[in-house]
Length: 285
Ligand SMILES: O=P(O)(O)OC[C@H]1O[C@H](O[C@H]2O[C@H](CO)[C@@H](O)[C@H](O)[C@H]2O)[C@H](O)[C@@H](O)[C@@H]1O
Image (tube, helix red, strand yellow):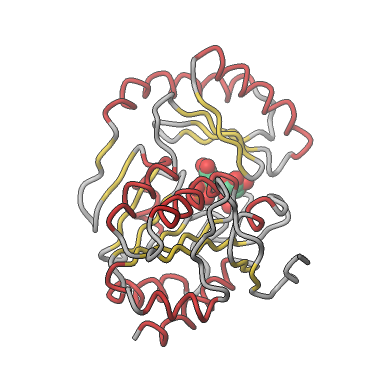
C-alpha cells in the first residue's frame, strides 16, 4: 500500500498482533460515526509532545498547538473521558493544559496520575528510586559534553541531543551504560534517551487498564513509546468485536514510518490534529 501524502489524512495498514483483525472502521468519518454511537463509553487518549504540542529545541518552552485546548474542552463533555498519557510529569501537563477541567493526566509513563484535577498519585514502587534519579541527573550534567541537555523529572532522567545532533551516539552510549549499571530501564524517543526505574509501567499498561470496561477509544501519538498504546487498543479490540479502537499517528520525519505503520490514520502535525478534532465535533453532537 502506498504511503499517505504529507498533509493528508489517510489509512495505513493496521498493526497486526497475533493475526487479529482490528475492528477499526475504514476512514475518519466512519470512525467518528462509530464512535458517536458509543461516545458516552469512549475514551480519547493523547500523547503530549509532538502530538498536542509541536516540538521545540527547548523542552521547557513547548505549548499546545493553537486551538488544540479549545477542541479538547469541547470534546470532553461528549465522551466518557479525555486522558493525556505522557512521559512528562503530571505537574508539567497540568501547567501546560491551561487549567482544562475534567481531564485525566498520566505522567512519567503512568508512574504518576491525577484524575480530573485531583491530587497527583505516584506509583509507590517507583518512589525509592528518586535519589538514584537525582544523582544520575547530576552525573549526566557533569560528565556529558556541553550541548547535551539533561532533563530531571524526579522519577526519570531524559538525555537530549536535539540541539547537538552529533552527540546522539555518545549520549546514548553513556545513558545505556549507566542504565545497565544502575538497573534502570531505557526508553528511546525523538532525539532523547530516557532512563526510568525498573517498575512495570508504560503507556500500553495504562491504556489497557482504562479501556477494560470502555466501549471505544482513540489514541493519538507520534513516538515509538506510543506504539505500546496502539497495541493495547488492538488487544482490547481483539477481545471484543464491539469495541471501536482507533490509533492515530501524528507523523514526523524523526520517527520515520514506524508509528504511522502501526496506526489507522495519520495526521501531519499537532496543528492538523487541532483541525481534525474540531472537525470531529459535529459527528459527536
Ligand atoms: O510522551 P511525550 O509527551 O511525547 O513525551 C516524550 C518526551 O517529550 C519531550 O521531549 C521531546 O519534546 C521536546 C520539546 O519539543 C524536544 O526538545 C525533544 O527533542 C523531544 O524528545 C520531553 O522533554 C521528554 O522528557 C519526554 O520524554
